[in-house]
Length: 406
Ligand SMILES: C[S@@+](CC[C@H](N)C(=O)[O-])C[C@H]1O[C@@H](n2cnc3c(N)ncnc32)[C@H](O)[C@@H]1O
Image (cartoon, rainbow, N blue to C red; front, side, top):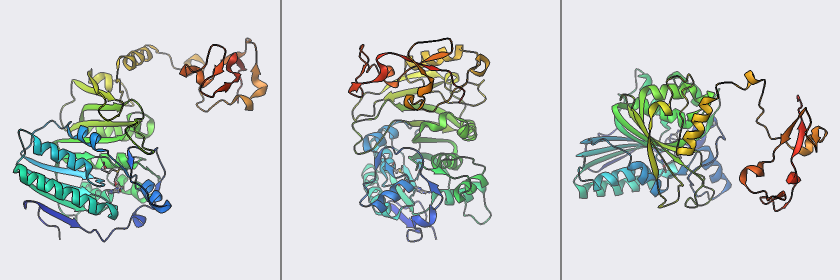
């Protein structure tokens, strides 16, 4: 039976002997590049598990930054941390609240984590939060659920008959697992049964968390930015933008030295959104290199510039600086599509040595310049020496490829 939430410094560990990751994750396939700090794998098996579970933990400075984005004061905070790992995100937010001039009276945390190996560290972290809250005079309770969040949340949002009443949250802080989910997998079918169509686990988490939030509830999440465009994420974008009012988007400019090992921060964003609130007039777009102590630049952008009301695809644009904004405006002025110009684009690499019969040294009526990638990086010297490769390349003169129809 689930214990109550209200006891001061109360910590529940439920079901934690019930779940084995292997039984839950036969359906998860490798997806996007890893981000953030990987859980140090001790063995190939541990590495497999880390990838299968999308276990890339949030470094403390990023967790603190995420915690700083919540705006609404609440006397009673009901916090959801789905895919909690070792609890870095909840801990950062609770710590911020304990130091705030205006503190909440009560905090209750519900943390879902499927990996049994993370439960002890998670519990220890929340024990620490409990002591911090005690010192700050805040009543604290935590429920740690060693469960698959998707399997637990779907029946709640579907309102299944024999599901215990779904807990309502007014705050969520998440770094969900990033994994593709196959179209015929149980996870995909489960999500579909709750009206959620997505090919990646992280979007499934965000969609479920959105549904579990009360009106006015706030969510801060760090996720891949792939949901911002592309046809696969269109149903997710529509669903998300309808329910949530985007307040802030933070982008990372580059990989950062501060994220050790093979951690990668590029292609991730942090967003802050409020459920059921009217669309804001402006969204704050901020960016940073991701380096510890690095500066964060931010500016306010009209919401219409971020998500255009005319755009049927509901792309989310991230004009992080003036250059991005200029590029976006320039693109908007191009009103003709490539097919209208008689052009088609193939995005695969052109490898010159495999297309020798199409190469010309001199331009002709039926040729187009073949431009080598290093030219875009200012790494080719005037003499054509390709500095990125450290050897004389074939780029010392432009080559010309005869238009081919292959
Ligand atoms: C990207 S990590 C983030 C961990 C933590 N929130 C942080 O920020 O450090 C995602 C976490 O979700 C857990 N996880 C993966 N699939 C899950 C599922 N279906 N239900 C609950 N937790 C899951 C992983 O074990 C991992 O600890």
